[in-house]
Length: 81
Image 1 (tube, rainbow, N blue to C red):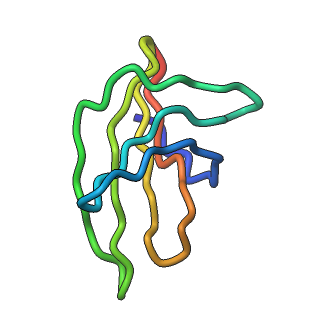
Image 2 (image 1 turned 45 degrees about the vertical axis):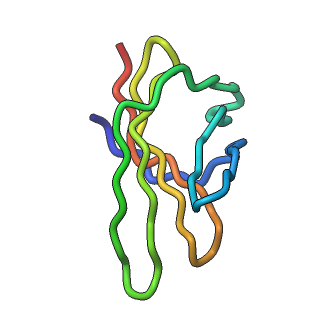
């Protein structure tokens, strides 16, 4: 997986019970609709909880990260097929 570490715009659904579901994101002036979330995990960086999502747009794999301290999304990596 190629590391990107770039801030991105994400549309997400925040459901009751602290569940977050990313729906689409913009990267390189292109909107990527998320068709599948294959894995989800949490980690901590200092006082911040970070939510990680391994997602696909139907052809490529991406790792998205939501930082709960500043409410920003980051594209951590991409594996283009």
